[in-house]
Length: 178
Image (tube, rainbow, N blue to C red; front, side, top):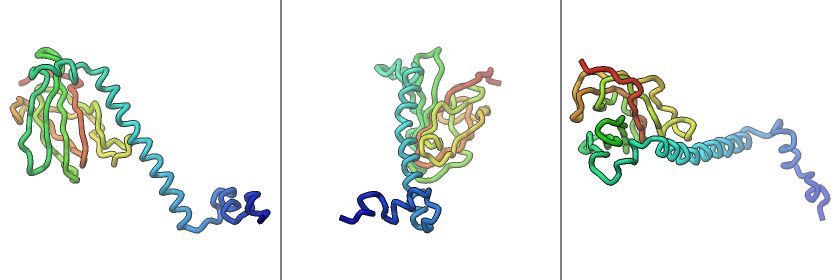
């Protein structure tokens, strides 16, 4: 029996114990790739938890599931850009949420989306957030609606729509339409 191998004395173990001080670049890169993959995996695992939290604390996303009053297609025909847009609401007087799904591998800058209310709209959830393992192409500031009708709505916002993503917008401050 090779005494050095059984006692952790082989070269690989010695290099590992010295925190990779003398490991060549390819080994360091392999270690970093595994570490990055592990972090991305944790991020991907956290997305369903956050989605469930949002769903449970937001009746507008589920309360009217049994009725068409809880769901409205805003844009179901954008096959050229592979984007779907719909709204969810808990009833006629409740807040609405606009859900934008990008099925293409392209980021859409200044993507216009119709919104049912004038005001400031913010992201309730963005699947491309870096904390979920995404690229981090989020809309960090509130989106101010403008009185340009779109998708059957009286107002619209311009947003960054990340690739292969789902973005849920909510009205964070409503204003009277002009």
